[in-house]
Image (cartoon, rainbow, N blue to C red; front, side, top):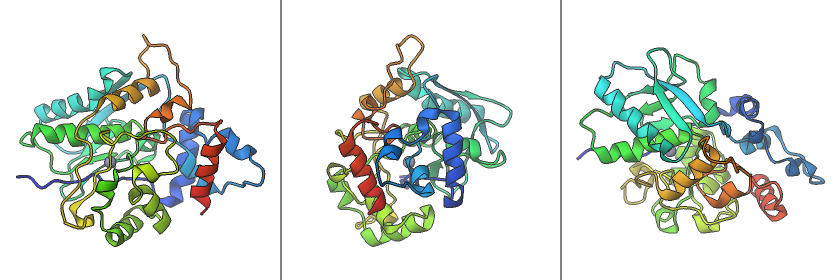
Length: 292
Ligand SMILES: [Zn+2]
């Protein structure tokens, strides 16, 4: 039985957050923090706050990204990986296309480095000789269930999706101290950020206006090193209907009317891609979380 590996969120170093936010807003103006934030009296957002509130959305025109591999890889494995990444296009205007040149998505198989991908438009800021995604030790012998669970999840990050908050029962399995030191070291997060991102069950999350989806493919994956009983938490196992629906809404196919609004996208809790501009209670909660 293969050892289960969990995804470790990969973000740009804090020193590059401003650059990432600028890049994201240039890629798509909708990525900028909600206007309403700057109109609140007495609230002066810091650069860090603006960076954290900037999303990594590719834009309503859809996503077409080229994909290359850093290592020598069999055609069969390349095709299999691409087919799982393209599972996101069932209802949405998303396509990943292999290239022999350097792709916009660059996949490595660095053993021991775990599974990760940079998020959305951030991949454009990674030097072209470095990977944007790592699939650790994937081979043709890897079980199909892992292609569903891992490759689709990492492709979700590339599309701009972040981790879904977890259910209370899963949060209870996490060793608080280990999680705090792990994410502080690997993500540069503060203790408060770790609490908000990893240790807060979905029903308590003040940033989630509507019901999140605990079965989302983007549900957190947590390494066994961080759990009380040493068992990893696998998270969602495949793209579910709500994931497909969100992706279709964000990246509508040309045949669909683009009915994208900021508020409707929060129906799914798996992402902070959009923030409702108009709900004062929501904005107050965001500010409270960011400034406490
Ligand atoms: Zn992940």
